[in-house]
Length: 258
Ligand code: GLN
Image (cartoon, rainbow, N blue to C red; front, top):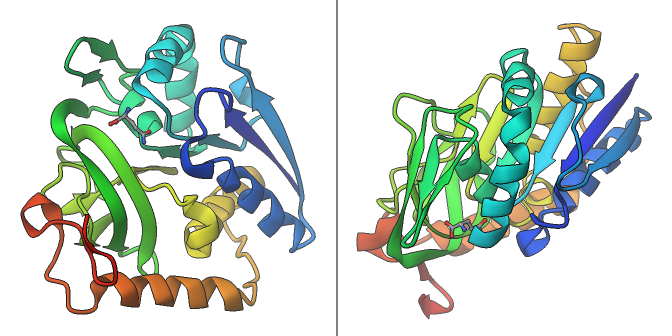
């Protein structure tokens, strides 16, 4: 078995070490003796979605988003076809926004790919801090770090999780990210996957099943350190905390108000 991981526009989208997500996907396959290769998809070059099993797309600046939106416009139909066919995607922050209809900033409206029927509006006051989610897909809480000015309305899509601590999609601290077919979109950096190995394995399992058959189940890895880190973060940010959102404020119990 072999999976091909496409790293989309790494030169424009690598906030907070989002490229660590690619490393994590690769390593967790290799540790199980499964072959994997990374194909860098440089900005402006044509993308062949046929050979790809997972697309990893990180966060970036508004300026990077504007450039990427232009480059990606011509691949929109192929990209949509890949997603609708169950192609696996991890889209973080700026990528989450660009998969939607638009990202309206203070100065301009960046037209998105329209693969997801969602909208993002810039508002003053960046939403910055650690976040903890309760997701029905995973046994451990999902943890990460968010920093965005865009607020995203996801309509009827299934959120990735309910916010236990942090701001989430709209800043109200109700829900975060979304899951659609084999795509996870989220505001969480971290990078996300090394901090949340279950999320990584969810993506890998879906990619393997799409390619090699529905019965594939990944053998568990020990993840001793990963679990410990996750537990520490959850304890640090959810003990003595009353929910998330702008009203509650993103308080770090050790570091005070952010
Ligand atoms: N530019 C977007 C925002 O501020 C995305 C930022 C990011 O990718 N962290 O909302």
